[in-house]
Image (cartoon, rainbow, N blue to C red; front, side, top):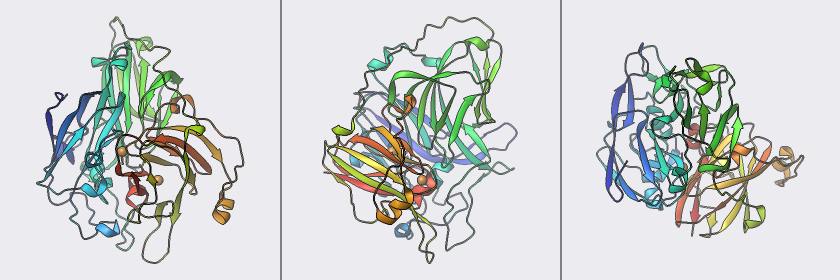
Length: 462
Ligand code: C2O
Ligand code: CU
Ligand code: CU
């Protein structure tokens, strides 16, 4: 919890961490020696600086020597830059992928915290290598609080638990494994899924909780895995917030589907489970266990029916509409399949020049067969709807013909977002106001292996 106006120093370093009592310690790359890194707590309106010191070794410990983003292939493999995901910050402080620096160097980022309370997180974003750096452990939580949220009486203190969820492939000897395509001319691995899931850096951890309400700050911090989270006994929980803070009203759910990069702010009541246990599951696989105490407790927390004033953004508020395709491309010669936004690669000239302060609608036209979690830096947005369209006709004529009814986002997706699941066969329409700062920022698929293989583009606010 940095003092306002003060400098906080966070150091990236290699360290060993025990992920399970039956396993030898695992080598990770961490912020301040732990995975996840330290949780930074900030207050809206109170700015401070963080010095992100790169104390990493000069050789990567993951058995990958490919440096897949063509234009960076001559650059040192160990490089880092920290991005604060979900934060509205000046361009120089954003952790732009090309602002990376090597071990021994450091970089100071200014965080104005001039935005609503939200579950933010920080992670590595260095060009062409962040999929490995994140997998190695370079991430942590950043909780931004504001007066309004603090006045609601939500569970707090010991009754608020962060859950950083991410899968990893661990070998029997405890070492991290990251797959290699085995083909030097086609080094890209399209997606990486682990053999187990870590919650807060532990395999199947157990939390001793009291029979009362808890607030869970969930982050899907995986490179590529989507999580379908539910409690084993099917108990309902209240979703009170999404990526960019509180919803207008709590949404009662029994399961939630989170893509890489997405967050969910959840309140669950363990009171009916006094003396029992319940597991948090991903589909049918347990991720962690809550052991609920026997003793009666006084629970003064509450979840108000109205969480905040949150007007729905309308289509009419947008002064410009852009059609943005999500596509796969293969020229079958030099490169493996590429994942492209608007048919362009990262280093192609900027095509999205946006007037500062203007509101735009982006229609994400997914031409692939997968869901992609699309993330925009700098801005928060709302999801207008998702509309089925004729994909073949689009491929041929480049025009959208809708073939079904628009689907409004479900209640838990009706707040401010910074990652949206773009479904196959659908046009996902989002609206954002590009205010705050001018400059060149990134937008990308948050599936780390897609991002590294060209599913990332710059946009320029002028
Ligand atoms: Cu969470 Cu551009 O990243
Ligand atoms: Cu981000
Ligand atoms: Cu993707």
